[in-house]
Amino acid sequence: MQAVIASGGKQYLVEKDQTLELELLGDAKKIDFDVLLLIDGDKVSVGAPHVSGVKVAAEVVEEVKGDKIKVLKFKPKKRIKRLTGHRQHYSQVKITKIG
View 1 (spheres, one colour):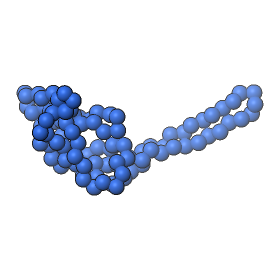
View 2 (view 1 turned 60 degrees about the vertical axis):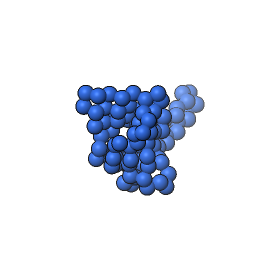
View 3 (view 1 turned 180 degrees about the vertical axis):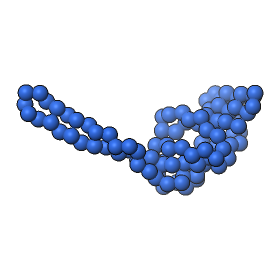
View 4 (view 1 turned 180 degrees about the horizontal axis):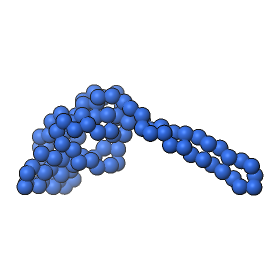
């Protein structure tokens, strides 16, 4: 069984026991997501905007950092350059139940 959930302005296709990285969710340990689309074999249920009576249960495993990106700001003919870096924080989430 697969489901499409929305978190942080993005949509994710998830299955049971799948681990994925979402935008930082805060201090919550267990989260319930509303289902936008549910795929159960050949049967597909599309919500408007959510499928009624179906939730996806998940638990936060840990908070992780993403890859470092480098940002270079450069102004030609003025001998100015500034190099900074950024690492985004994510919540690593494991899907425990769909239904």
